[in-house]
Image (cartoon, rainbow, N blue to C red; front, side):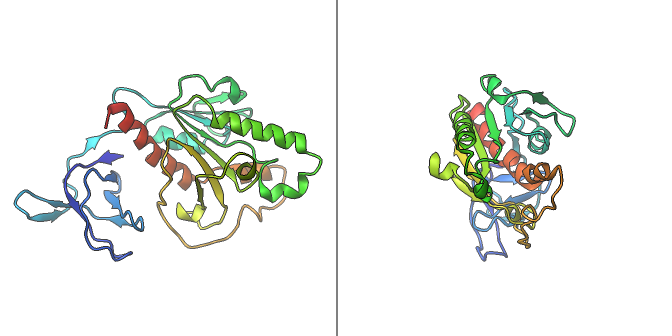
Length: 263
């Protein structure tokens, strides 16, 4: 991600907001776009020069904040075996590691172990995907007789939330975390991030901003809910959507870099 400090005007055809000036607005360098703060549509940057003239284009000289030059941000992706979120953070230049009891489905930095043994290794940011078997409302009909398992699952979530890591996001479906621990800071859907599906996903955040939608698309099919029965159905249901992982990597690592460089 790159940060531009020039005075910028933009025009958004989607939401009708005509112009606004933005100082230090974030843009995605490979797309050369800004995001409208009202509807998140991509916007062509326009520079207002000292003489008052305006030029639309991509000649802006950016200050590069990512990856951090003085400190390579360490990111822990807890309870992930797919490598989707880990690879999204690694792609933007961070020292990202996944950790799970299972081996990683993809090659990359992976710790195959109980994540509780690795929470104090100097991480700057943790994204956690604790198992939802005894937590999700969709499995409520199976809760009876499994009170002990559910209590242990809740204690694990609380442990992750309270880890001594500066910035934390805990992800889980709608379920008992909201009633037994606290309500989520945000609920997102795949269709906000380029996937035409529904799967309400809760985020509990510590020192992180809420995710902004990146690509709002049509399609509201609950594909995960209708996943055909199979031995690996649980694997398919638990994988992170790539669009959501990329949004986390792009939006949350920016926060880290500014903090590390005093911006």
